[in-house]
Amino acid sequence: MAKKSQNTAIAPEKFEKIEKNKVEVKCAFCKGTGKDPFQLLSKLSNCQVCSGKGKVKITGPTMKCNFCNGTGVQPYTTSRVHCLACGGVGKVTKIESSQKCSKCNGTGIYPRKPHPVACHICKGQGVVRKQ
Image 1: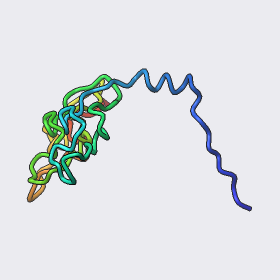
Image 2 (image 1 turned 90 degrees about the vertical axis):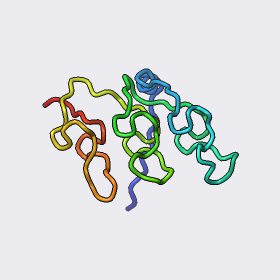
Image 3 (image 1 turned 45 degrees about the vertical axis):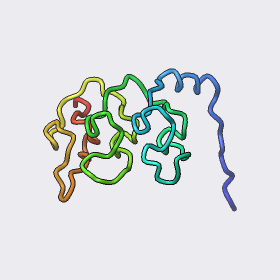
């Protein structure tokens, strides 16, 4: 016998609570223009990070992405892709009560050849939640 699908909607009061923690920040990848900064498909293409809005909602409080230094572009490569640590936003949710990451020694960078990548423990931010 097949199970019934349990599609449940979020109650409006819970949705409002979720939205209260969100802050709207300027998209770092397109610098708030809403257009693809590298014009890969065409000059009219929308930014893949903000979907053409120029702004992105993330959970606050926020801090600058340590891995891409707030640019939203994947560092240490010649490719034109968004930062994998912050998703191209340039900001991440600030970790309250944090300590330096022991894996990357607070740099946010895991030394891999030929190009370094974001540390898999702190996700490129150099800090982790205190134990």
